[in-house]
Length: 236
Ligand SMILES: [Zn+2]
Ligand SMILES: [Zn+2]
Ligand SMILES: [Zn+2]
Ligand SMILES: [Zn+2]
Image (cartoon, rainbow, N blue to C red; front, side, top):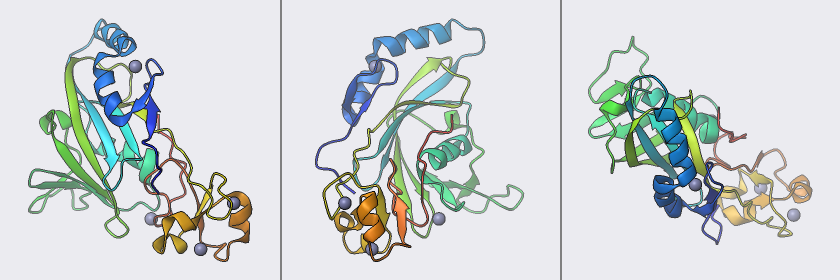
């Protein structure tokens, strides 16, 4: 579901609204973020590498996240976060592709086969600024994301959590196919024919012929796929 205008989002530190690319630059220099970093670095504890990640839908530019992730957190932490905020419907498998290796769920006592490895890998061993990491959730009705390592810093995390949401796209619902009001439901039958004709407001969703095929529209690139019903909220 693509909107005509480029999606903007707000910096969580200072509230400024910008495009995805504008925020990638802004977050490096945001005075309020710098203050939060200085305060965190004044705390006791060991320094580590922290990564600025830009996560986006591989197919379009409407959905994106700017995250800061601790280097001593694992790919499993990132997988959990992405499932919570965007993806989880029925516990499908997922994978990160880094170099020649697929980091995925292993069910055999953590034994790895060929080019598959466990997600229990700390990201400071894997991530470098400039990397673009493909990620897939559900190998059937697949959601494909790209994780860009935009920047890294040495220091201390600004929160207790492994990942911090620094910005995400502000969601603009698509217009109802019948009346043009903001749509709240998508028909998982009609979406294969034409996504713009498959989205409805509450009133027109009730009148739609496939009233048992409707799913809610939320701020996620997985809307309308498999049984995804949101809520598309961060876990912490
Ligand atoms: Zn800011
Ligand atoms: Zn599913
Ligand atoms: Zn309507
Ligand atoms: Zn339909």
